[in-house]
Length: 150
Image (cartoon, rainbow, N blue to C red; front, side, top):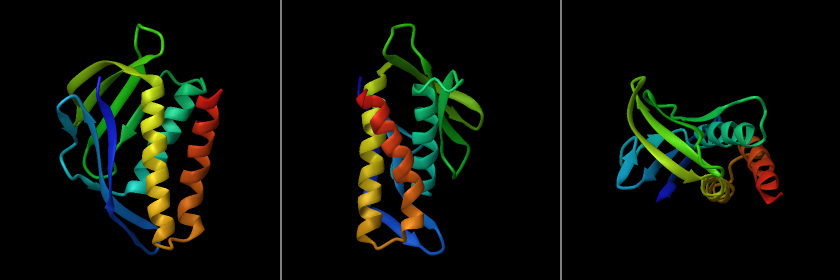
């Protein structure tokens, strides 16, 4: 199953105060969600996504995770698959399911989140964004890295 979180690193812009925009999309099978070249507040959505997935993986009383986009009414909801070690995803547009995908590896989702976050943080560091813009995303990404390394 092909699943990836695509960040167009060259599109990432930091605009003070605390506004980082860029192109971010989720690719699964032959589908791009929400749309090819989707522009959003990339550090904000990555922080939300990594945090939601971390709480799910750490069994912090949540039964699913959600990858919300800040722009538009788009999200991806994930829950445990009947097969251990996998999740099922539902893609939501305007509060309605648009499609679903079964059996995505938990570890693959974690790796994609970590990879996207680290690439975004590296780009922001190269743009000399202030540490305050980077700290929250870095902290939750490090927690996810530590959790999946266990």
